[in-house]
Structure formats: structure tokens, C-alpha cells
Length: 254
Image 1: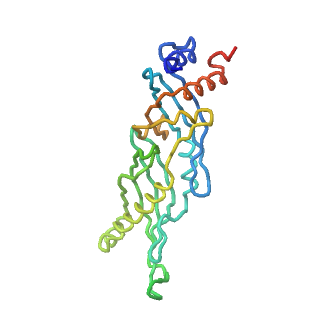
Image 2: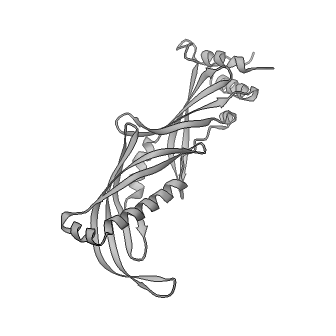
Image 3: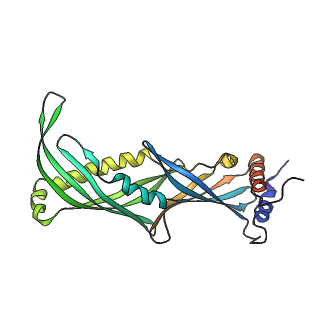
């Protein structure tokens, strides 16, 4: 039996008197982003739209404002780079969405050590040579790969106090630190993509996201939008019907 023709009717019925022409259903889903040994909470706002007789449009908004509050506290005083001759510690961090981009600002302490070779492969950190307080600013964007949103730094700027700037420019310390920081942060970001998972009752939707990017929520709130669609099948329609009935958006079975 071909059930695809029920999609517009189901969408309209779910909205009832609010807007029967919109043919759209909205779900709020609590989710978490696993990062190393912890999980960060966020909210997935999911919209299903009867876009065509055999296709459902899917719009997902990942509300990351809770993560936006938690991450700066968790990252404070953590070393971004820590090798034999160099340690870069993040002193503070703030970030906010700016239209369709993400701006990050913070302070770092760059500590340079003596580093001597102890064997063919091993090195040993020696005495501290100097420590520099620098300001960091960068922007991030979102790349969509394999149905997941990956954060990626566009570039990174480091500025040091004027008294130390000349010496740093002479030995290229800031440029070297910048490249190491970009590599370290990109490694972490590539290990922590946002792959929104639907609850079990909606898992059969299996949406394919085609577009995505940062989105500002309110005043500087961090969000990520994903747009895609679902190919309609009889099992998909039945699952949607069941969920709508469970949530009392449409009448249950007689």
C-alpha cells in the first residue's frame, strides 16, 4: 500500500488550528556532545516539513548556548601545546556567534624552555627561558561532512606586548606558536564532530543533511543549522504517525 500521500495530511493535522497550511512539525530533543572524558549538553530543534509528496524537508538547529557557557570554564588553565621547548596555556576564552560566523577571543601564556637531546629520539626539558602573555583572536566556521558538523578555525592571530614584540618577531616565536596551536586545536575539533542523533522513535527518518553552518541565536548565542531531507517510505510514515499520536498531536488509533 502506498502511504506517501498521507504526509501532507499528517503534517497539517499535527499543527491543528495553529496553521494547517504550514504542514510542519517541530520537536525539541535534548542531546549531548561527547568530548574526551565528558559530555556537553545541547538542544536539537528539529522541524519536519511536507516539502513534496514523496519527500520530507528536515531543518535542524543545534542550540549550543549551554556548551558556550561550559567550555571556557573547562578550558581555562589548560595547555594547548606542551612539548619539550614550548608550553602554550590558555588563560581565558570567550566566544560568540556573529551572524554566520563564530568569533573567539582569549589570553594565552607562552612559556619557552631550554630543550636538550638526551638520546637519538629523546629530549629533556630544561630551565625556563621566558614567559610571554599574548592575546589570541580567531574565527571559526562549520564544515558539513558525512552528515556531521565539524568546527574549523579560519585563522588565528596572536599579539604580544610591544616590549616583547621585536624579539618575538626576530625568532618567529609567534608564527611558530600559531601554527602549533592551529594544528592542536584542529586535531581536537576533528575528534569532536556534532552528529545529531534522533531519538529511537524517530531514528528511521535517517535524514541526509546537505547544507549547514553557524547561526546566531539571540544576542551572540551559538547555534549550528543543518538543512536536509528524508526519503519517504511506508515505515517512515508509520513511525511519524506513531510519534504524533504519542505526543497527542493527532488522535490515537480507534
